[in-house]
Image 1 (tube, rainbow, N blue to C red):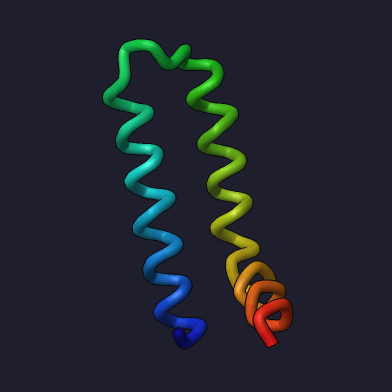
Image 2 (tube, one colour):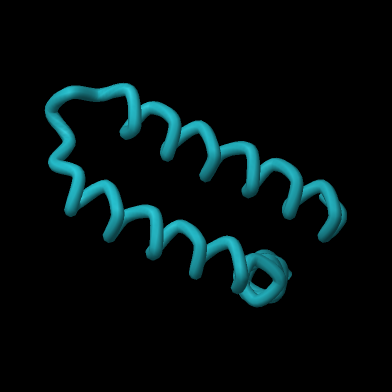
Length: 58
């Protein structure tokens, strides 16, 4: 898997998680905001995550 493929799949997954949380009535709005910030930070560091996973696999 290339870095671009990883980034696309990772972004799609994070978007799906946020959408599911937004549609759930059980999620407190403050927790949703906190999770959104965490997901955004994970998204920003996806190239680092890709490199770490790739190096571990080798």
